[in-house]
Amino acid sequence: MAAAPALEAPETVDASGRRWFYRHPVVIRLAHWINAVVLLVLLMSGLQIFNAHPALYWGAVSTFDDPALAITSEQGRDGTNRGVVTIGSHSFDTTGVLGLSREGGTAVDRAFPSWATLPADQDLTTGRRWHFLFAWFLVINGAVYLLYGLFSGQLRRRLIPDGDQIRDFGGSVKEHLLLRFPEGEEAKRYNVIQKLTYFVVVLGLLPAMVLAGLAMSPGVDAAWHWLPDLFGGRQSARTIHFIAAGLLVLFVVVHVVLVLVSGLANNMRGMLTGWFSLGRPEKETAR
Amino acid sequence: MTLHRRKLLTVGAGLAGTALLGGCDRFAGTETGRRTLKVGEDANLYVQRLLMSPTTLAREFPAAMISPWFKPNGTIDPPDREFRALAAKKFADFKLTIDGLVQTPLSLSLEDLRGLPGRTQVTRHDCVEGWSCIGQWSGVPLAELLNRAGLKPQARYAVFHCADTLEYAGGGLEGGDGASLWRPEHPGSVRDGYIQLAAAEDWGGASTATDAPKDDWGQGAPEPEAPEDKRTPIRYYESIDLFDAFNPQTILAYDLNGKPLPVSNGAPLRLRVERQLGYKQAKYVMRVELVESLAGFGQGGGGYWEDRGYEWYAGI
Image (cartoon, rainbow over all chains, first blue to last red):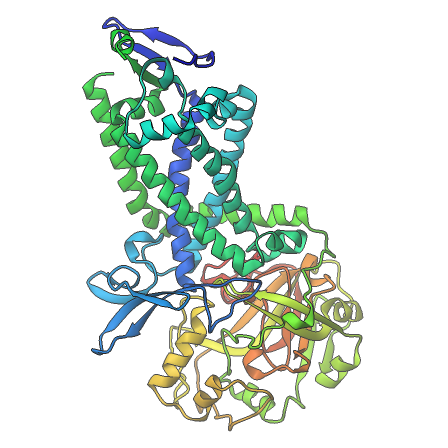
């Protein structure tokens, strides 16, 4: 077995012979849960804001007749209203969820349904206030996480694959796809796919999200003319902000599924108390 | 970890989740909630002002990027009798008033304004809803007017009084005589609401004018508003502080894309504050009043939409 790098984290063996590893320091745990709540509020208030003009464009301005994506309701051939998502020249019937959905028993025209938005009612004002307050929490929490991670070495340990992990990339992918999760020494570090995924989310997706959000601000754009250009214009930035939100949702779904299948109790205990079980040594030697 | 503790944690997380989703709306409805949520706006104002100087300019675009159609929003055809009378004479009788905390109050016709040093800028207009258009605006820098009037030392804000009535005090939405008014949910919903309304209740000349883009003033036959309305009209208004008022790009625009401003885009004069969102760009500006405090106007929020919960600082 390739030697895992030495980790300066406490370890202990309990009376039953189970090995425990202090996987998540308190700053990481706090940042994780704050992030979970903040991202949920940002997602739902973001969908509320999107509903105010449920169309996306590419470039600096809105080409109203030719949106890249639009979520609307229109009258179907049978005379009843249908929810329709249009992407480019393709249309999809999304009645019930997107474009037209039930709100308190009546069908209403709204892009994202009431259960997905904050506030539940159509209310751009309050949606904006939630979004812009929690955007600050995202940035502050993210800055604390990054600074702590950088100086404690946690970031490198969590996001950068070790040499042996890169050499055995294929094997790791296979193990992961078969949903075989390591125990013992190997469980002290994330596997290579985890590290690369977290790398992309933490250092790619989330910063891009914040920058694309800022690129929609006329004030920030006045101070930094280059910012909207970075995304190809303000409307492109809005589209990228929306796509990045979708990718974050995808990440969270996969993340939660893997937390469930790789051992909910152990993972949750790890992220709540810091302590993660490495299993029992006899089991490890049997591998 | 005991099973008991684990269960407690799970139940706790579940409860927290439910409380978050269900409680958010209730929280936002309380005074504490409103004040808490406003912290984001204060932080944005503070930080954005750190990033900018009073003369920081919004991006200006090449003429080739001008949008073929500049989406009119909010009021697009004021129902007010006084405004219609002005529009019918192509604003020949229009006078812009500048008063309040100034040394010399001014009263200027469109002709006077066009005679002053002007500024032309091609800028991007960002609606609070999310869409953007690029247009070319020509007008008089507000700083030019304020310097001529001379500010008194107490002056802190410029308040823009507009000609268009959006609703009546007491919640009355009907203007009578076919000129219906509506109470929009947000700045972006107005135009759609207007068109739906116009389609639903055929209200004559005015409705045809709303759908057809107007190239000039006074087209169609302006209908008089309600004969004798005793209710108090609530008109659009806006306000900016001196940081924005003296910015070179802050102008009172009389031309859009090289032609006189159409009524749908705010004729005869529209404010441009290029570092902020669309609802700050007050249309149908009749009077600029310099004040020390925004209390006493509308509900004290500093603007029609601000009184309805929108941020006074619309830089984001």
